[in-house]
Length: 236
Image 1 (cartoon, rainbow, N blue to C red):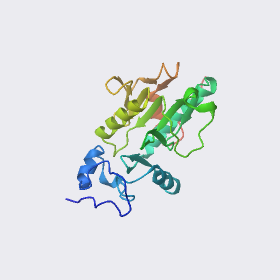
Image 2 (image 1 turned 90 degrees about the vertical axis):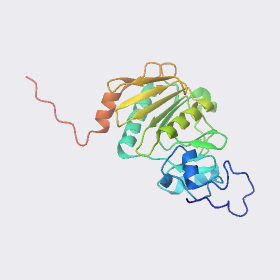
Image 3 (image 1 turned 90 degrees about the horizontal axis):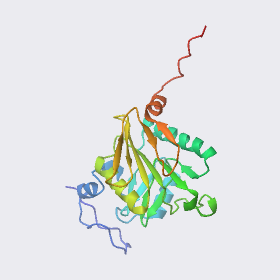
Image 4 (image 1 turned 180 degrees about the vertical axis):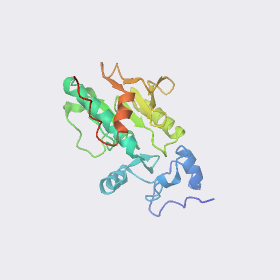
């Protein structure tokens, strides 16, 4: 079984897990995710926010920072389109309801010390944005009221559950978990309080974005449309 070598020389901090862990143990700790998503340089347990910022800025991949380890954020074609549709719906809503800012799938957030997450979509109210100005730091210390996670092929159930627990610990008010495989969703108001949204249901956030309603059926239909829509038949 492959093990993680000792930290590089010069590292003086404490690892968040035993230094003799195997890669399989680290993989299990992170929710059973594929090993390919775990970046081995910087050394797992030693990575910093600066490492995440530098790598995210110069590569075509995005990494979250979890227990000093850079974990690749997966995003497939349909998932990315779905996230874009939800972003657009919330942005359109905010044009007539100036309640805050919506952030897309590359918006890294330090939601807790040493923990960087990148929700597929985030809503942050004005009260959480000082002076109603966007932060200038590449990875701001901000916690959204609403975090949206669109499940990708390499996401595991335990990984998503860990994210949800972390979101609420940090102060997130609601999480939308969207599953492209079942074309359904779940709305969490705490790690234990969840409401299922069927394929013909709608995503809502009454206490955060009053009046917003996003149809799952219409969102999936738009995401899966691979060509111009058929012209409507002539009338009369």
